[in-house]
Image 1 (cartoon, each protein chain N blue to C red):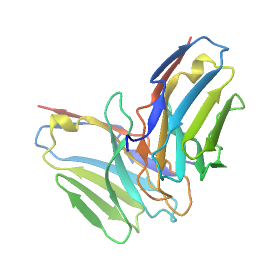
Image 2 (cartoon, chains in turn orange, green):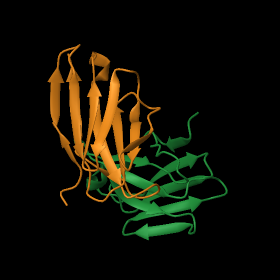
Image 3 (cartoon, one colour):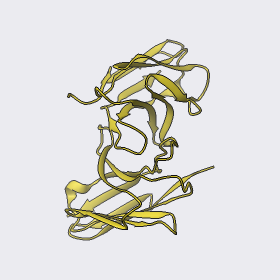
Image 4 (cartoon, chains in turn brown, green):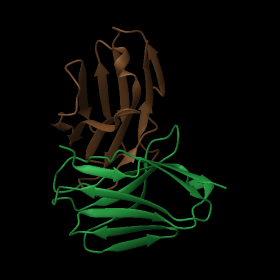
Length: 113
Length: 111
């Protein structure tokens, strides 16, 4: 398996534009996580899915953020409209289950200007 | 409410020395205690993990020590090398609780 695949690796967009981040988890993993990493706030869990169903989205900062997992091999994180304070590295991770190793993608570095 | 507290925030160790990073947690339902290592430009990757049925686990130069009563676990890096320079995160989980990462410890090993 190629591991968790995220795209794009880098995204630069203007304030107010819609941004969509994509993630392909490892095949067979039942859990998918979206994290955001910044210098100020560290690594924050935004939302996680179990068997394609969102379980906890309490970390999603506001309504501008939404995440979907239409099938077991694909998830998206959308920001609409984007703001400069959304600039961060966004990671997707997947795992077999609760209390097991999480495998992270390479991340998407988002810059909103 | 912060469930995971990691210390120190940064650490400078000479090559060959011992690096020690600590993690304190509150949720007694946690049953998986990992340490992740992150290099610049990369995602975190599992370094070593322990289950609560043992108090210590060693893998090469890396050791986890676990103190269930104190709700703490620590990472020891023996004979620290410049290649160990990275950011380390604890991320206890389990009991159907979402994974919470510690604030991270930036380790710099100087030659």
